[in-house]
Structures are given as C-alpha cells and as structure tokens.
Image 1 (tube, helix red, strand yellow):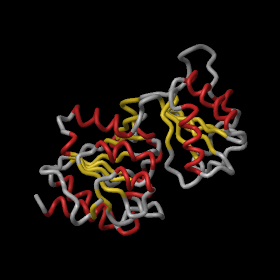
Image 2: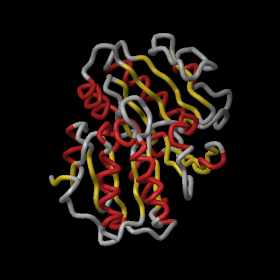
Image 3: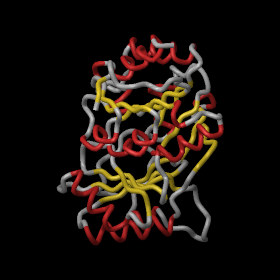
Image 4: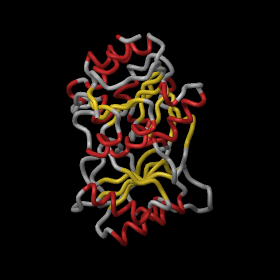
Length: 281
C-alpha cells in the first residue's frame, strides 16, 4: 500500500466518492475549512463529488450546505440515492424485503442472544426497548422488531432500508463474522460503528453496487473514480474504484482493500488527496 503522496492516481479523475463519518468528517462531525475548499475546488474543476454513507438521507445536513454541483448522495450503504438539493428526497431505493428482515432477526436472536434491533425505514427509524437510546429521532416507535416489521398485507408499509443489530457484549468483528456466516445468503451484512452494531441491507446491496450504477448512468468509467473510506462498509467501494484511499484511522479491512492510505479524518486526509488530484490536472 502506498501513501497519499505517491499512490497512483487515475489518468483522468471524473468522480470522487467519499464516505462521511471517520473519513470526510472530523471526529466532532464537522468539515474543516480545508476540506470544504477542496470539495469546492474539485467541483469547479469539473469533478463530481458523491457522498457515499451509511447515514440516512435525513442525517445529511452535515454536508448538504457544501453541495456544489449535482447534489446527489448514496445513503444507507447503497440502499438509497438522495437529492440533497431537494431536502434529501429519495430518488432511488433498494429495499430489504420485510420477510427477509424477519428471517435475519430470527437467526440473530438464535445465534447471538441479547441482540437488540432497530428498523430504518424510508420514513425514519424505529427500535426495540433494549436498543441503545436514539436521540436523533425523538418521534421513533419503540416496539419489538417483529412488530416493527409486521405488515397487515404484503407490500404495505414504508420500504425497509436496513435493519440494525446491536449486541452489548460481543466484539464488533466477531459479531460481524457470526452474522455473515449465518445470514449472508439472505442479506448484506456490514458495520461502520466502533461498537458491535451491524447494518443489514438487501442481498447484494452495497455502496459499491449503487455507486457503479450511478457512474454508469453518467458515462463515468470505474477507472475514473477515486474513493475514500475507513470501515468494513467501505470495503467493496474501495476495491471497486480505480484508485482508493483508506484513512490513517481506518479499520484493517479498509486498509487491506484500498490501493493507498492517506492521513486521518482529523488531519484532512481526503483534502490532501483532492489537492494532489487537482495539482496534476
């Protein structure tokens, strides 16, 4: 793996795809002036910037003021595409079928007793009484996952973007490995939190898959994409992009997947590479 200053870059960079938490955002969840300037300069140079995150669209206010061009974001680990210029309106959804979600909940209750769940719908998040308190969504319904996922008739209710599973005692990577071994044939399972919190989406849904489709729609080649990330939910995107950078604070899986490594999120690691891209144009 090479550094931010010597890792090969695409001959032409047409799109920058960046994760948010632990990557573009500092630990205090803000953007530095240097990063804001780098994003603006990239867009002014004709390079599209995609925010690609595990966050839902309603939590994109941290970057929505810094959208310069297209204003599109890939949210919920690829389960949704949102237009940030239209208050995060969802223009594309890849849902997790409720029957599948219920089966995954059943499996995880069996293999990892003590797991609690939250359900992320296109309309908001709801969670079980034992799930860690959720202060960002005060209007959430609190009930067992089976009730949250119940439909009066098939196809009713808001689409499910992902199910979150939290365990109070298991090591995060051990919980991820356990869930993938027992449920990966039914859904996509990943994680982005430092705690034992899994994110479960529809089978085949990932940041990489949705990003690839968005690039194809725009006539942008895989080789023309530079991606940034720091956690297991970024691995497929880092592997897919023509050039990719794991942050200096990244999880070992992200470091192994990327073609290069840059500085940490608190050291403007994304901006450092963007500045290098612009200097070579």
